[in-house]
Image (cartoon, rainbow, N blue to C red; front, side, top):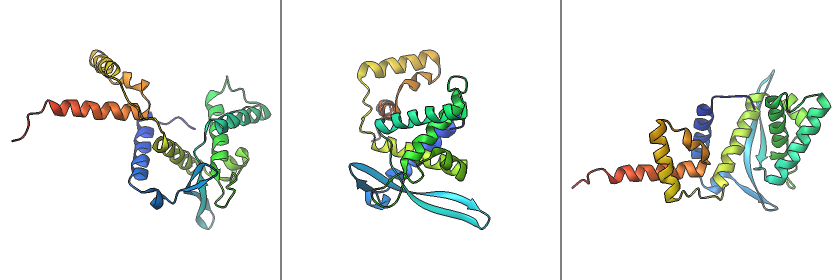
Length: 199
């Protein structure tokens, strides 16, 4: 996907995650098919007659799908004469488009890929609409991530010391989303413990 300010990405993703977490699975109309969760979504397409909303399902890609998408992206890059090493941003876009083509699914069983050809997907639909679908998939990935992001005592103390020494939060970049959330909550609790208790 195109380069966007990381702070904007994190903020938008956090808003999406909060929106998802506020609702129950029933409210989200989540389906399960052959061990995969499917989430409803609408692809927006603008035409001469106005805005068209296309109902689809989103499936968070698992590792085998990610590998399949990477192989598909390499074949596509080779076909169009793009060198992934010389043009890593363009290749990353193609890889993401391949992941999208495998993650956007039909509404009806067996919920096959809605547009299996990434080149057709990219050609037919506007980038903001596809970016919105990808952002939703990434937010859903974080919501269903089974990791708890637990930070042990030594790691917590090391991060606090490093942040204090450097005077910035760069050391937090090593944490995944769950680890970052755990660190922030733990820091807040620690700070609160130093506040005088109200009588």
